[in-house]
Image (cartoon, rainbow, N blue to C red; front, side, top):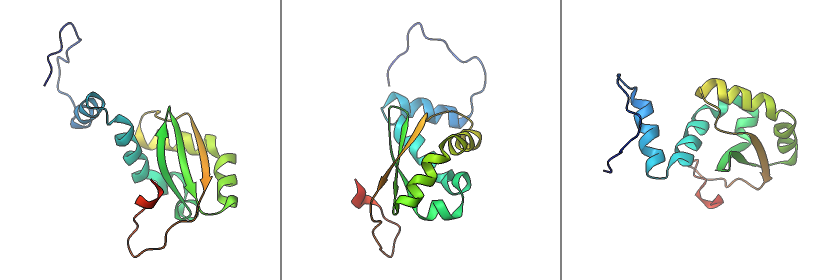
Length: 119
């Protein structure tokens, strides 16, 4: 626990989600935290069909990298990127990404929806 000298204090009740975001950014997990939030709303942001064929992989410098299993879905995501970013921002309540980039790779077919092989 570090002490925060000369930093603005909250003189009110703070939501638990704000505390979690502050702690995550303090220990360097803010991009992972944002990525998990995006993954949780991904299907409702892009739709069932695109969500089935795509997976948010990582965030680097406010760019969301997405893995898709066919070039058609990559093209659809790139063409509709402004709508998807707007929808994600509405669902999450904050703008955490500026653009989307797609990579075409085969998705592993397993019993579980495990995507660790992409890392």
